[in-house]
Image (cartoon, rainbow, N blue to C red):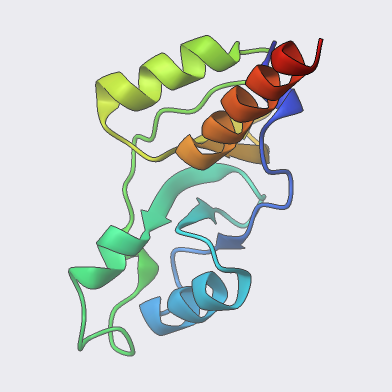
Length: 129
């Protein structure tokens, strides 16, 4: 079972030159905790999380995404197993992993919640059988 079955495909992104207030609006509107940070070509260059925003509380209108985003993000591809993704989330103590294609374009994100949903779904399938 690979992450393509469980990842969220409707990834919300921001650019490094947007203000954190705009990023917060996007997170609130879509009820998510992770935003992909992409360059002008749509390639992943970082991630911005709710935690990153909290560090700049009171300065969201004056601070650019580039100041708060996490660079050097661990990303996986669509064929990564759900088990491997879960292991990375646990080992790195992160809540989500961007899923990218070889060209660097983001195609999804798999979060702790996605993998918990997979676990519950598989458990329910086993119990129904």
